[in-house]
Every structure is written in C-alpha cells, then in structure tokens.
Image 1 (spheres, rainbow, N blue to C red):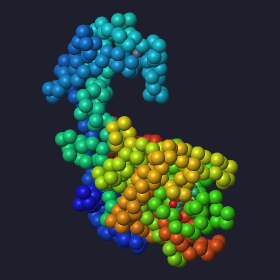
Image 2 (cartoon, rainbow, N blue to C red):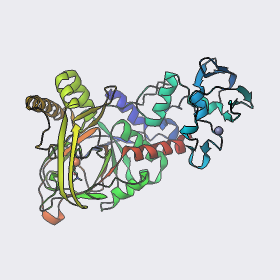
Image 3 (cartoon, protein in one colour):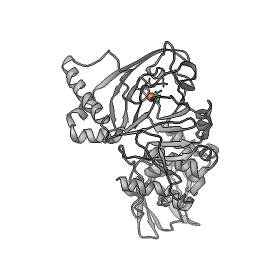
Length: 444
Ligand SMILES: C[N+](C)(C)CCCC(=O)O
Ligand SMILES: O=C(O)CCC(=O)C(=O)O
Ligand SMILES: [Fe+2]
Ligand SMILES: [Zn+2]
C-alpha cells in the first residue's frame, strides 16, 4: 500500500515529505503537469453515446434504451416524468425541479417515444412532452456499475474505475506516511494546485502547506479559497496559545493526547486548518494518526472492542464562554459506522468526554477496556506520524478521520507558541473540489 502511496504522490503536484519527529524533509520529486496529475477520465462523461433504439416496455413501465456500443439501460417511466427537463418542470436558472410532487403521477404510462435529432422524445398521456439528452441519460443509468461510477465522481468515495483501474479510494497510512505537501500561495492562486490539495485531503486525510506568511489571518484566507469557514463557539478562527483561565485544554502548554476536535458537537467540523504563527523553543511537536486505518485494525484485532465503541454512545460536554457563552452536550459513538458497516467518523477527545456516562452499570467496565484497547493502538509508534511545525507552515486535515495531538511545550507568556486554527465542513470542501475538477479537467 505504501509503495502505491509513493507512486501516487510522485505523480501529484506535491513534494513528498517524510518526517520522523523533526521538521519534514523535502524529497524532490518531479513536478508533473496537469495531464498526468489528472485522474483517468470518468466513465460516461466524454463523447456522445449514440442511441440505437428506444422503446417503451408498457407492462414493466420501463423505457429501454439500446446504445450503439451494444449496452442497454432501463429507466422507469415515473423517474423520467419526474425529471422532465422542460421549462415547466425545471427552473433552469437554479437547475432545480419546479414540478410539484403533488402533480406527479407515480403510476404514469407513456403515450409515445421517438428519437428526434439524437434526443429521446417522450409524449405523456396528458400530452405533456419531455426531451432527454442521451449523455444525460447514460450518466444516470441505473445499472450498479454506472451508479457506482457516478457516486465515485460525486463523492470520491472509493471504488475502482472499472476499465481504467484508477484507484481513487482512501489510502490508509501509518508512521511512514509521506505527507503530501504543497505551496500555500500556489494553492491560493492556481486551480491545479488547489485541486491536487483537496483530492489529497480527501484521499490521504492530511496535506501540509508551506510558505504562508507567519502572521494571523492565513487560515481565513485559505478558507475563502473554498467558500466559508465553520463558525463555532470558539470563534470564526481561534488562537491556540497558553492562556490564563483557559476555557479549553488546547489553550494551555500541556500535552494534548490524540483527539478529534469537537466531539461535543453532534456534527463535529469535517476539516481543520492549523497555521503556525510562532513555534515554541522547546516541545510543541505535532502528532497525527489515521483513525480510519486504526478503527479497521481494531475491527480485525479486537472485534469486541470495535463493537462496543461503534455501538455505545458516549456523552461529551463543553461549557464556558468564548465567541459567546456556551453549554454544549452530545452523545456520540467513538467510532461511527454507516449502515454498510464502513467507518465514517471518529469522535474522541478525552478532555471533553463527560463524567456523565449514560449506560447501564455493567457496560461501564467493558467500555473502558475497549477504549483502552483503541487508544493503546492509536498511540503505537508504528501508527503515529510526528512532525514539527515552523512559522509559516499550515496543516490541513480531515477531522472526521484523523486524530491529532501535540507534545507539551515550554511557555514564555506573550511571545510564546501561537497557532491559528479554523474549521470547515466537508460539504463546502467537496463543493469546491467538484468545481475545481470541472475547471481543471473539463469533467461534465
Ligand atoms: C481548539 N479548540 C479550542 C477550538 C477546540 C478544541 C477541541 C475540542 O474541544 O474538542
Ligand atoms: O497545539 C497544537 O499543536 C494542536 C492544538 C489542538 O489540537 C487544538 O487546538 O485542538
Ligand atoms: Fe485539536
Ligand atoms: Zn416538463
């Protein structure tokens, strides 16, 4: 897997960095242009598949399209009527459906289907007519292969482009991570660099940016590259410094064990930026671990612990005042899995884990033992990647996937270590990623 990672990295507009408890060192790799950086063209998006024949299967209420390449697709009448692209049914300026559901006959028949100038033209029983573009239809084919390909294009969720063998799923890593690194100003000003940044953020979960000015305001600048940042009770952006009467353990000079930020919220921030304005003279090194990788390893090595951490909800709490006063409570699984059993999010900050523990008394000890097994695994040297930020460095990472920590540091009051941070959500990041893909590669 790691050799694959290396191969992939060397194709990107990144310099591969390999660090072990020191400032990551530059490994020179050739800067390869857009063509090679771009992933394989997505299936069904290029060219124009010809329609050989279109016919209505009235019994099944399905439209069958036979394509020139010999393949065939089926579309339910109801779905076609629901997605009529005419100006009565679609508000063109918003690309949104204006047809009301109350006006949709979910058992509609079809009067006629014709091929007109390579468009599929349908007349409905009420004499409303719809025209569909073959490209548009082919992309929305209901076969499992086509659906998988389209979902991959939209969410980069991980599947293999059949034919092209371009693997785009998440890449798990350990202490030997070659951390993807890009130039801060290039990401701000160059679409190709920005796309490479966001794709690596999605796939690897962490990207290091260098060359930012060593002054406050850079995480806000970077968030404008995407859209807007996520406001929380700690403010639009927040200053990680040793503060008197700290309202969070992060605002001391103490060690922060591996954690995700803000599990006290039911929807923790998806993405985190941390920019180093000033580093400590002693201590303050950073640590990260791939939480998804670790959760999968726990599932294999200690299925009982995995089951407990993914099924028991744990209380988190956070109260105080910052942007304004707050009293936050949540109940989260330490390991979130979706309905198919895939790990989707890690929620764990030992500092905000509540003393309130809403579970039957006999489940308490098994819970602690399971958490101990997970935290012990996270902290193994072979799993943790360590680095030291210098002024002007900015790290961007997936806060749903990675756990991060920092060593304690020697505090010098006013002129001490200073990081500025900000949060974003994945919806906004993925939105920018899709737009950049289209701009850079011309994907449809
Ligand atoms: C850094 N800060 C204070 C904004 C959040 C720390 C994370 C947490 O309390 O879960
Ligand atoms: O100080 C650091 O390096 C990390 C700070 C942190 O994890 C946080 O503010 O939540
Ligand atoms: Fe944190
Ligand atoms: Zn219509």
